[in-house]
Amino acid sequence: MIITVTLNAAIDKTLAVPNFRLGRRHRAVEQTAMAGGKGVNVARALKSLGQPVIATGVAGGPNGTRIIEQLTEEAILNDFVRIREESRMSTAVVDPTSGEQTEINERGPLVTEAELELFVDKLLYLAKGAEICVFSGSLPRGVEVDVYARLVTELRKLGVTTVLDSEGDALLLGTRAEPTVVSPNELEAEELVGHEFSDDQDRLTGLHEIAELGAGEAIMTVPDGCYAKVLDAGGPTLYRVRTEEQEARSSIGSGDAFLAGYVAARYTGRSPLECLRFGVACGAESTQHFGAGLIDPPMVNRLLSEVQVEELEIGAEIG
Image 1 (cartoon, rainbow, N blue to C red):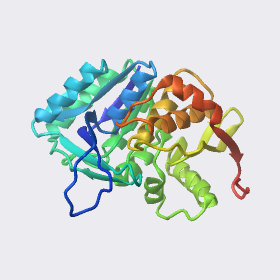
Image 2 (cartoon, rainbow, N blue to C red):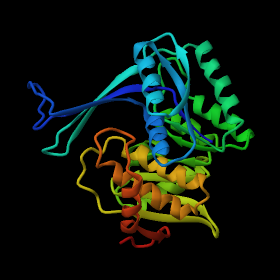
Image 3 (tube, rainbow, N blue to C red):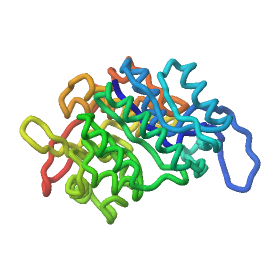
């Protein structure tokens, strides 16, 4: 079983608005509203890939009820702790004429200490039957920034593979707790190591720095794929994995689709490189859909042949 944790679940509304401009009145030509939050998106993609997954976290108010009902309608197994305050709503505006995206994310509900402890108890119970646990996304109000670190430590004791994808101090403290895999995007990785990346060598150095902070393996997603430092048969190996960027319908949630593909492949016992290749194919395919966490597995398999791989070394010239 794979667990996905979403502590700041949301209703994600996506609007397609041609020629979007601030300060003007617009009409959307397409829209969708889905249960969301990064962990929920990962769970949706894992379900599409045929993997056993349960989504958990906290959810409250009418939005929380809607999140749980939508997951149930999608046949995604879920077990959320109900909280008093309302779960958030997030809105993304996609301009199909320019490809630009604008996202507005509410900060989320206030979660009390008692509510959080109910969730921790639930997670530790679910983890007894799990092989992998994915911690994704931001934290709601009232939750201490060391919560991922605490949970990673507890699940490591149970022998569960832990995967962390967050931001800011929650990511930093969580990484120091030595999760199995840390998977930020490039901006999150720059914040994590404390400096910007001006070229590919900076990105590779950044992977080493993330590993030195505590990550067993480090994967950094970028628009056309990823950079990764993983533990292969011969020891730590650096990879650059990419595919040609697709003409995207929407790239919202493509990082979550990547992570779902990577985790699905890892769960089924594929090699580290094959996990990265499959993740990149899933992330690329997801950009063809309007809504986060949506992928078409047959199309993912077709894209696999287009995924390119380079094995790298610090100081090596990258093509």
